[in-house]
Length: 235
Image (tube, rainbow, N blue to C red; front, side):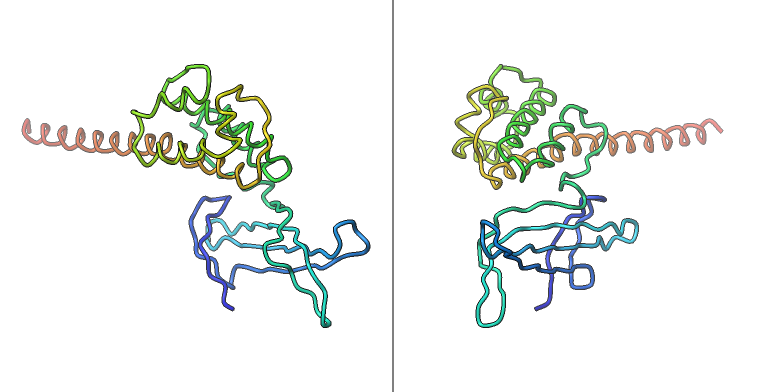
């Protein structure tokens, strides 16, 4: 079966379509008396098709497996653990004009997401609060109050995304408490928080920066044209 899926390179941030030409997968089955029984490690290697990048990512995942009728196979929906071997995390590379403290919390949350989802979620909550306080200058003490404080400042779909994530089980319950309180969450829930932060950084910081650059370019070009026109008139 031909491989074809969309992928964003963690090195250059370019979106790409991955096919058999830049993707490989291998499976190692093992048992050897381990406590979990028959298992399998799947490794996937993706090479960025961008000629200016050509970096590669290596991802591993641990699954339950079975042996029968002379062959092994991986049991469906039995992923126990997943980790990024290269790069060390799947954190996106953001510009250095993003506040250092926000990037530090975000990068560490990504790095430990699978190893300790609860610690990752704690860092993400602190990162989310840092983004709201820095970008919107809203500071009310509790994260839940600060989220409510930007409801009328952001577009409806962004608010719906923030509200949806904060409504998830333990994540929502503990947004009303100390952001440094460690809570039990699943890796998927920790990833939702990370994904939300990535979107907010792009939609708020990066979009604002790009808009400012574009407007400054227009002003500069318009100024040069006006100056040239004035010189021609005087000449």
